[in-house]
Image 1 (cartoon, one colour):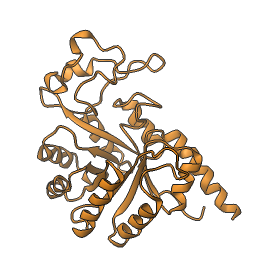
Image 2 (cartoon, one colour):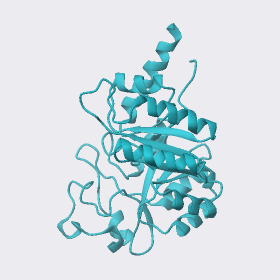
Image 3 (cartoon, one colour):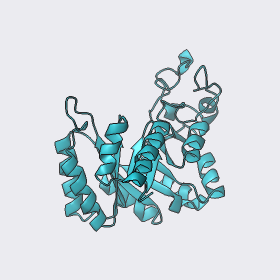
Image 4 (cartoon, one colour):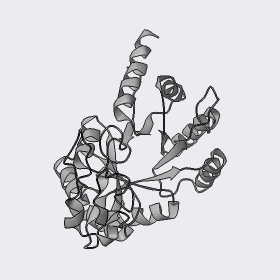
Amino acid sequence: MKDGIILWEAHRAGAGGYELPESCLAAFEYGWGLGGRPEADVNVTSDGVMVSLHDSTLDRICPKLPEHLKGRNISEMTWAELESVDIGWDDFPDQHVVSLDTLFAILQANPDRNMVIDYKRVCIRDLAEKINSYGVAGQITFACCNPELLREFKGYAPEARTKNWLGGTAERIEEQFERLRQEEFHGITEVQLHLNDAPGKSWRYALAPEFVSEALQITKAHNVLLQVLPWKFERKDLFAILELGVRSFAVDYPNHFKKYYADYFARQYSV
């Protein structure tokens, strides 16, 4: 292999809710087992337990949610209530939302593992203090779309990495990236570009490949990792991104991703 993937992450707790139920411990183990950084989104229960859950309710991810919990905010549930709900599928039952305490204890016992925390509904200082109490800040990447919040978090947990994800239209992403460049990426160690579909083009995504390539060179010059999140991809799409030199990805389909990139790098031997 002439080069390789620097870093990849499994979106929404290991499998994006596609290959496994999201937010359960099995999904995190799946992401870690495949060699990635699983992502936790953070909500807090009414009794103060931080949990990995993208939405503010269970409605989307729980196919058999009891009537009395439909539309109910996580912040209105106790940890005991939340933990009792089965968020699994018919062919993958008995799965439950996992707490950050459990995840941080796993990191503490496995210093070779890393994870991403995407800011949702939590006090940043409280989150940083919990991370520091487990001594796992060096294994954490804190992510959000607000660079000021990233810098605030970095002040509380200096050892942690910080990732500014950039979403929206191609124009909006380019504007946000330029602002970060002008600020010399202060307090930010990673930048993620959302690759939204643009149907009808040979290059699948709305962001032009020339911009992605230029952004890669700019971030490298500032010692910042550039990551892309292609919401959907086939083999040819992933190959096209890799040809630009991108070596960090976030994906909803980690199993497909790993097979495609293995194929890409295997082909480099014959070049």
